[in-house]
Amino acid sequence: MAGLEKYTEFSLINRLTARLERHPQQRNRTHQADAEIVRMADGSWLAATVDGIHEEYALGIIRDPFILGWNVVAHSLSDLAAVGASPLGVLVAVSFPRTAEAAWQEAFFNGVDAAVRAHGTYCLGGDTNFASEPGFTCTALGTIARAEPTLRVGGAPGDLLYITGPLGTGNLLGIASQVDKGLWATLEKEYKPVARLKEGLALAPFVSCSIDTSDALLQGLAILADLNGVGIDFEHAPDLYAPPLVALTEKIRFPLWLVNVFGMGEYELILAVSPAREPAFLARAQEENLTIKRIGRMRADPGITLSIDGKAFPLDVPYLLNLFGTCSDLQAYLKALLAYDASLRASR
Image (cartoon, rainbow, N blue to C red; front, side):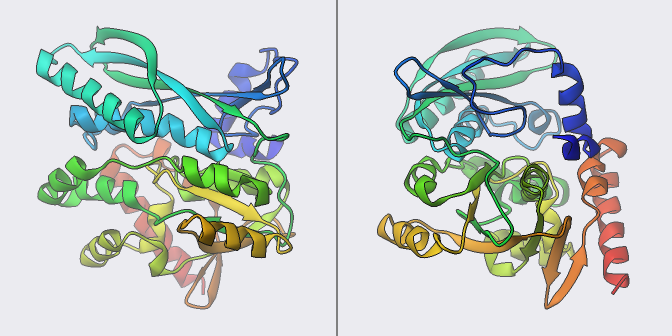
């Protein structure tokens, strides 16, 4: 896991968890899977994950209580999808704003209820309180019936990379919150992403490794590259993205590829598939009526390269993924990203 030390988040996790003992039946090591996976007495696997929505609320990107409730559930269920698990249920822990009235609280749990029903699972329980700094957290539990779960490791040079849906739906909402409040208000009401549980289950037998994009496509690619000791070619093309996002970025003259850097992803799955298994993989996707698109491939040389209009640009991934923590606010962050794009293009 040494390669991930160059990223602030993973360095922090490694430092804080260095002395924690791993369960003897745990299948994955730190960072090796979207969910923690433990073998049960009957030989099956238990998948468990916990995630929260905090910055999105604090920054004003998601404030509607129903949408918050939906997203906190979908966020954790997406981790189960990445390991090919079937959900047992979720536990929701919420620290409500002290000013939240009864209607606001009820709307939040209406969102939770709608999300678990849409994903065919249940809210098993949780914890509720009030705090000056609100927080919304969900633990998801699932089972894996296959002999081996889908991890972030297992990829190799030559593996092809696919995505399960359009890129940028989360960052469409994030960008709109900064440049078009009217559009943001409309998009927020519609922002109900669905975890790719069906895709994770159906395609798992053909996949060498997998990760979800909830923390941005670039971070997912960087994790896969470092854990598997490979480089990655990302083949950028406008048809990979949500059409409203393409229109918005053109309107504000913001380079489309940069949306893959933001921390507000889109709950899709990045799937690595060996060339030998690609025909069966594509056949299963067609049989199940699943939308998948190829976004690149793994290679032997390290690093991540962005391909745009036939030109290849090596990316300074540590700079890009650590950038947000060095900026004073969102506007400064966006300005720094624009400056990076300009310097990148000037290099060619």
